[in-house]
Image (cartoon, rainbow, N blue to C red; front, side, top):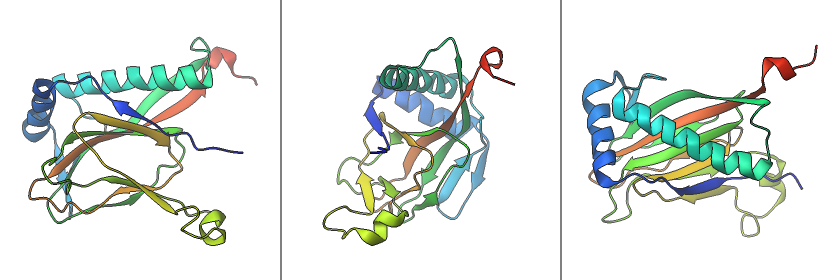
Length: 189
C-alpha cells in the first residue's frame, strides 16, 4: 500500500575512472579515522570525485524523476552529506539513518570480488511489521551485495549499514543523501 521504492543499477564507470577516484580519495581528500576505517569530510570533492557526484546525480534524476513523474521546472533536488566510507578488513559500518532527507544513495567502489567477503549494504526494518510478521514470511532485514560501480537509491528513513568486511581488502563506498523541495516561486505562503 505504501511501498518504499529502492532503485539500483550499475553506473557507467570504467575501471580507470574507478581507480582514479580511489586514488583521489586516498591522497587528496581530508579523512576522519574511525574504529571501522575512515570517512571523508562531508561534501569534500575534487576532480574525479566531483565527477562521480555529477554522474550519480544525473542517474538519480533520470530514475527518480521518470518514476515519480516529477516536474523539473518546479522541483529542487540537492545532494547533501556526501562522503566516502572505507571499511577495514574484519570491521563493519554501523547502522545509520538519515533524517530530514528524501533519498539516500550508495556507490560501491573498491570491493574484493574474489570471494564475496567484502562488506555488503544491509537495510533494517524497525517498524511494527518486524514484530507482527514471522521472519520466514517477511524478513526484517535485506542484504545487497556490492560490486564496483553498483549504485543504490532508497528512501532515507530506512536504516542501513554495512555488513562485516570478511575479506583481506578494504571496502570503499560513496554515500550521499538527496533533499527535495519546491522551488521558491512555487511555494505557497
